[in-house]
Image 1 (tube, helix red, strand yellow):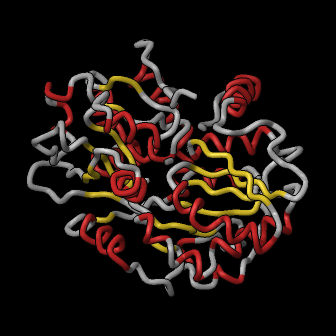
Image 2: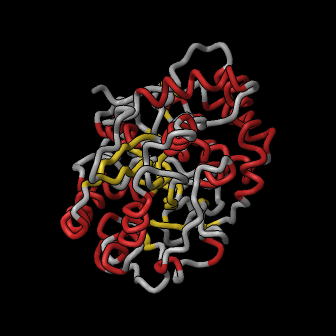
Length: 361
């Protein structure tokens, strides 16, 4: 689950880094919007789905979909920088960044007719966002390199993984924040940060987004990374990458544990082409598109669309025996800024380690 930062003290201190991040977003210039187009800001991981379904939308509506892809926190930061003059129409990102976008007034409530079969718990009551593709947080290994699959978080501290671990920056990637969410849920906050500080001794670097980690795993530049189940399975099957998603247990003999980490969709407030944005949301939440979500190893956001086909079966097999824990996203939002600051000060500290590695252009 690729895939999403934290508010810093003082507006001036956070504005410049956010603007710098926005300028570097993949495939995006500040003039992303053009006449006869609709602009989609999206977290990475769903590229194969877009490639499959968007041409039909473009043909039917006579409108071009311009896509800007980055880490889920990064696309929200960009939308926030552009808040007074939005350049995008639709946002797809992970929690807690979709909640952050709603909290910051970036989203326009829109009750799509196709939201009705999305569970109440998986959408905003006012229509600001709804789950588009359900998913699970995971870790991943290169199975050609890692012969003894790690079973617990403690296993990652073994000397065999020294300099071979990487995970995405919690400030810019939802999957990176998920590392903190899961470890604090299982260990408690203080012990989780103690663990992450120990893990940092084995970490090679951190990436700005999560999608690039799959490439680095396949190249054997790292051996273990964080990710999400949909993206990892899709990259392995359709991207030809050598990687395998795994789930870790809190302790030896325990159940591997994870939580749902869905892609959520929302309409950007005052976007330049809101009508086309609404049509794009309706289309992506339609039965036609939702039925293709299992093809990329995702779980349909709508309960009336089955998780079916061979790839749906692969998802079911991957999560068999895995314990799912609930996440209070309101609590995560309340803790997110503190967790990010604590990660930077206690985990990264003065190491000088890279925390925003990106795929070369």
